Picture 1 (cartoon, rainbow, N blue to C red):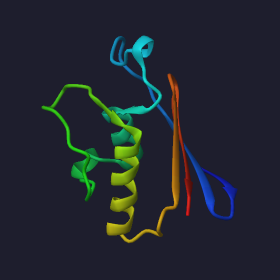
Picture 2 (cartoon, rainbow, N blue to C red):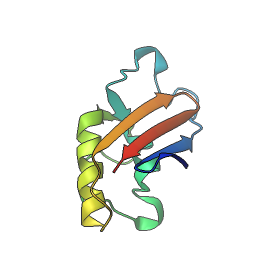
Picture 3 (cartoon, rainbow, N blue to C red):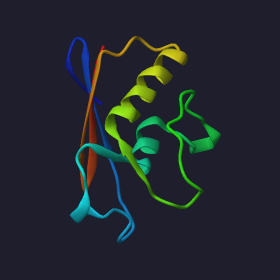
Picture 4 (tube, rainbow, N blue to C red):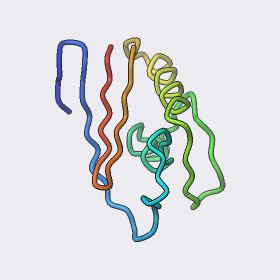
Length: 104
């Protein structure tokens, strides 16, 4: 986590995927994989559940969703969990990391 300004934080999530888990040749930058969404929110770790969940498919399958859908759920969940109101979220995905910039 890095403070970019008084109202903006940049969170970097390092990741490692199994071979073939993400199809980077067909990756759409307007989409976010459920694996990344889970890493960012902690959803399903130690039985934690995001209050405004984006949905999914049966366990074990990778899927993607529009980033705008994820950020809507993220903002709503933050408020439901008692965090400050989030104004803007920007997510950039790279093979080795996901960077999320949050402005309050």
